[in-house]
Image (cartoon, rainbow, N blue to C red):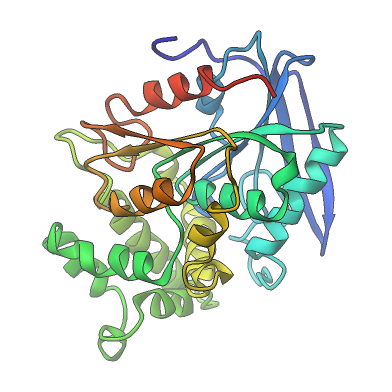
Length: 319
């Protein structure tokens, strides 16, 4: 299979009560009787991307998408005043994926995840290996402390002007410490002027390190005030805890995945997620194949990236 498939219209949707006052929005597309697959979006907090349906042959696959806690059409939204994030952790999201699988009556499924979604996919497989038929991961991240330090400081050497603006967004006395912690304090500040500016500064930085090609345009969602605030609050909430993972936890877990078939798709120009991460993951995982996309960075819209993900899905064996 080459190229992307036509986008399909969801044939079912709903809200699932997952406890702790949270309800997650889900929808399914493709063939209602097809092989099941679930898409785990990035962020944390990016929400469903309808374009993800184009990775799948709609005649073969039953495609499940959902908005993770606190974002998209799930409730409560992380941008709402006074939203409590204490029941929004990786463990909660893993449990939500499993609850959704049971709700939809699915025995095993292909798990696809990009960026943060790849982290969540690995965490889900570590906990529920028997429910994973195959995996396709792209723009891979493990949400480790080292990766978070790189994306908030180290990669600034390639984007010095944007990084200086990003660093200047926090008080002077906080600039030598954790920028994630400093931004999180600003993002949960009750004053809209304070948290609104922090959300804009944070999202401008994330958009800057995606721009590896001339003429790159930020995704239109960055223009939405509620999206920016909810996204930045969730990202900093997860990053300040390093995703609640121990050092090397997901790499160690991958050794137990054995021959679960997997394709790891990564852009060679991914400044935010250095290639060493998927390379190390592939070395630990006997059933995985690493596919590099020479002209792509971290953005799934970069040249060749979406096509490589669609090709990986297309060659997955039947569940």
